Structures are given as structure tokens and as C-alpha cells.
Image 1 (spheres, one colour):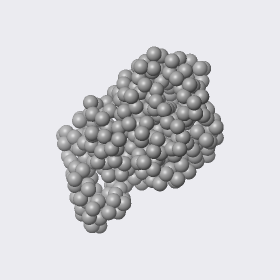
Image 2 (cartoon, rainbow, N blue to C red):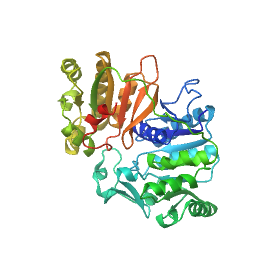
Image 3 (cartoon, rainbow, N blue to C red):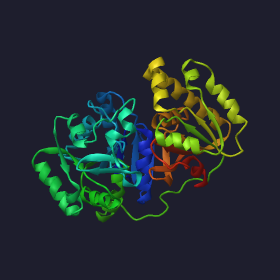
Image 4 (cartoon, rainbow, N blue to C red):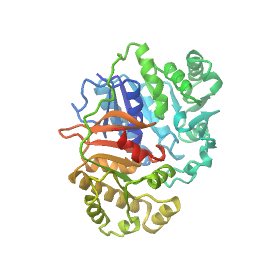
Length: 418
């Protein structure tokens, strides 16, 4: 029976942390939305519920997160994790603080840590400030994000604007003094009424220390990196047995394709690096209501079987802003997501059995269109991005990639990994 239940605020983030747990030897199932009764099998150690709550109203994000918590509790989970992006995507209204508060209340817990660090992907926290590589978060492209612009790198300040409760910090020096030192610091802050604690981390060793320190906590929050230390911590507490083959998936079959909807710098670089057949979709025509998807499928059917193909609806930030200004943020996003969903259905019907999807919103649209309700988590392609297999009679292999993740040659190497 599962011991760890994860509530993720987007689809690719859910897959990201699921892959981290599989690397730690935990057999992991990811559900798309709130799992129906009986969907979660008894042979998994962790269940990740993938929601789409990152950019919606805070009240609705809280309601969906609490529903997910109830489903995970019904499945037997005893420890819980609220997973958000390693760039702490949110606004001054939330949603990280409000959801954290609601989950703490529901679990009758006093405190939770906040640690989006993922050193292997360049996300580190020092004196409570989030860095992406050598840059403060506020100096990166995230400053101009169309939905969650991150203009303040201080996670303590960002979180304090989202909650009425006290927010504190455990600096790196205290983390690196060891798990006992970190635990003592957290307990001291809790005694002072500090409910939310940002924890520094700049290396994987720090994440291991953090995992051990919070191994008894009912709720942990962060990016996928902080989950690195949890499997070992649970084994030391006899909550988790040693097993092999946690990342086993069915044999890969069918043609290979990539759908890219993210406009992040990493995804744009991966598109430029792709060596196979590539069709860039006309997003303006999509928003005008033209049958771009149908024409793209006709193109794709003639290319399948000759190697991986790529269909992209990605653009540079200035192009995206221009499109949003012309058609509206919500209308343009919905039109593109609808087209990507239609393409996913058409590609699978045409024989695609291995599909890479880039972008959280695009991934959500695709899994919805394909009626995917749950995913078995398999081997890692790049840090934070594993292959998965849909649960059902005819498994479909899916790689759901956060827009910011992956090396420049990700699209090519993903299929080589199989």
C-alpha cells in the first residue's frame, strides 16, 4: 500500500517528482486529476496526483488540493507532499501559500518546509533567495512569465505575501551541520509560531540531509529535488522496503512524435536542435480559427515511420505577448491547447505509440484528450523527466516535459533512451 501521497500543481511537475521517487526505488503511480476509488493498486509505494492548479484562482486551487488529500488518505498514505515548480511559480495572491496553509490545517500539522531547490537543474537556494544557475530568479526569463511573473527572488518575502502566518528561514550553514541540527532549527521555529520555513540547499547532499530531517513530518512542500532524500529516510524508519525494478515499463511500440507547446528558452533550444522532420504551427492562424490541426495531421501521417517527428506551437516571449494582446490571454491559450489535444488524438490514431510532450499546459491538454487516467513511472531521460506508460489495455509511452527542463538534444535522446 502507498505510504507517500503527492499533490502536484501541474502535470509535468507531477511526472518530475514521480521520476525522482522511482530513482529512489519507490514504485510510483501518477494519476491525472483526483483518482477514482479503486484506481490505485496495492503494489505502489507512492501516488502522485497531477492537478492543474498553478495558475487558477487560489480558492479553487485549495479546494482541488484538499480533494486530492482526501483521496490519498483513503488510499492509505501516511506522509504527504505538496509539489510546485522549482522556480516557485506563483503570484502575491498565491497559490503556494494558501494551499500550504489548507493542507497543514487539514492534517492538523504545525509546520511545513518550502524547498524548491533542484541543484542538478541549476535551482539553488541561498539565504532564502532562489537562483537559476548563477542568476537570481528575478533576473531570469521568469521575470517576464505571462501568468506568474517572478520579480522577487526572496522566497521568504514571496511566501509572506501569500499567508497570514509566520514565515522563517533555515540558512545553508545550519542545513550543512546535519539533519539533527536542521531538525532542531525547525522545532525551534515551530515553538516560536513559525508555520512556513524556507530551507536553503545548494547541493544534492543538502537535499539528503533535509529528507532525513523531515522524514517524520506529515507534510513536506517543494520542488522535486527535495524528494531525493525521502526514500532513504522512509527506509530508515521501516516505512519502505528495498525493491528493484521500480522503473520497469512495457516494451515500446509504435511511431515516435513530439508535441511542443512550451515557449520557454529550454524548449525553444530543443526545437532548434531537433534533427528530424519538424512542422512549426501557425499560432495566429490557430487563433483565427483556421484548420491548422487538420493540415498538420495530414503532414504528420506522411512522415510517421521515418523517425521521430516534431510539431511545435512554441514562440519567443515577444511573439507570445503579441498573440495574447491580439486575441486575449485565455482565448489564445485555449485555442492552442485545443489544437494540441486534437493533434495528440490524431497522432495516436495514426499509430504513434511513443509521444514526448513539452510544456505543462500542453501536457495537461494532451493527457485529457487521450483519456489517460494514470501513468506508471519509468526510466529517467534527463533530470526531472522520466518516460511513463499509460495504465490500460494498450499502454502508450509518454514523456511529459516541463518547458524549462532537458538538455538541448532532449527530443532526440528521449527516444534513444527506450
